[in-house]
Each structure stands twice: as C-alpha cells, then as structure tokens.
Length: 206
Image 1 (cartoon, rainbow, N blue to C red):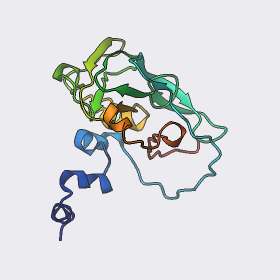
Image 2: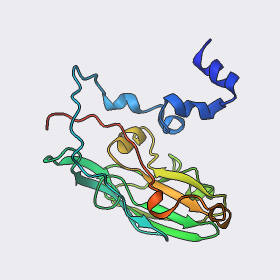
Image 3: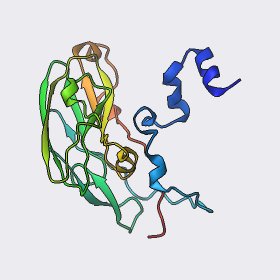
C-alpha cells in the first residue's frame, strides 16, 4: 500500500503529512532544489552546551525587521542567520481572541520577502501571498483582527522561490491565539507551557 493511501485509510488526510514531511510542505515544495543541498559524508553529534533560546513574547503588535543576524548555535562559534529581531527566529506573539493588532514590518534583506501568517484567519490583503511581496529596503504594516478559536499558529516568509531558503536561515516565529474558552479549561500555563520551534540545521566546520 502506498503511503498516501495508508494515511487516507487511517483518516488523517492531509494532516497526516505532518508525520513525515515539513510543516512548510504546503507552502514551499517548489523551491528547495535551489538551495543546492548536499548529503554530508559524516554527521558528528555535538554536545548540548548552548542554552535553549527563548524568544521574546509579545502580547500586542510589535515591530518586525527581517535582517542578517549572528547567532551562537554551536558554543564558541557565531553563525550567520536570518531573524526578525536581533537573533535567529522572531518573537512569539501571544494574542487574545477579539484583539486587533498592527505589526509594522521592514525588509532589511537584500532580496524580496514578506510575512505569511500560517494558521491565522486574516484578510486576503494581509495574508502574505507570494504576490504580496515587500521589496528590499521597503516596509509594510500588517493589520488584522484575531477572530478565531485558540490555536498555535506560526509566521514565515512566502516569496516565490525564496521561502525555503529564508525559513531555513531562520525567518520564522510562533503566533499563539488565546481565548476565554481555553483559559476556562485550566490547562498548564505560565512556566509549565514552553512553546518550541524545532528546526533541522546543517552546519559546516566554520
């Protein structure tokens, strides 16, 4: 039985793709080839000595600037990455249902980019479709109202044929929607809730 048929039989449908494929598969299965990825002859496991990075949490709108950053992924070495606010990745937005937010965005890259709000219900003009690009050095204000059930979404760039590279280099972040209904459930929160972004990185000896 083919894998897709197996997943359909189990009733997972498209959600089953999350088991074995990237969360980006619905957005960027067309541009990874341009990254010229090669298979490493030897992979060496490193010691986990770099503390877990906890992105800033924003409870209202905030300024995002895509740009080149330095990050310590391996102890004692700086890696050239991309980020939205001073380091790799971007801040975590934790927004209450019913809130209206404005997120001024500036493109500090040397190429076009934008922001796609993956998992949020936003107006078409704010969606960050590949046709809605922000050119290098330009800005755009993302403004929308959060009117949906509590969920954990994320944001990432979505320019045509550049999505995979920009996300791989670090342009991504989390967007958490909270609601009164969710809080009434008494689920673990505060220090008992640690949202994680897990990314697979290939690093060279430098």
